Length: 123
Image (cartoon, rainbow, N blue to C red; front, side, top):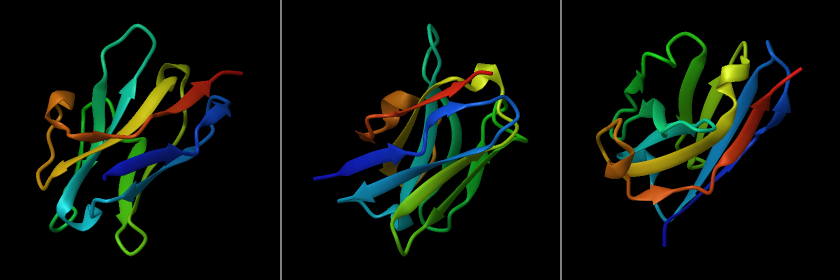
């Protein structure tokens, strides 16, 4: 049984950094793609950053380039999303999701999801 669980969210101030973690069980991040998605209030779920299986190539959506960093620790089967210089528009629920091997920005292509972690950026 595959389980993903995000952690590290919360209330943060503009300009701060946050590191979200995604703990995976029942799936090996070494050979599965792991993507971070965000669902902001009233908006569609959007892909932000993906790290592929079999080599760990990273990809960022246009909205994530520059302030977002995705990486993984395959020994611990953990993935991370670092967000720097947080802005109010970064507020939302952040999800990690996995699929076999190749990254894809379409959330419908992902088989397994965590419950999400709320990040609220406010002063």
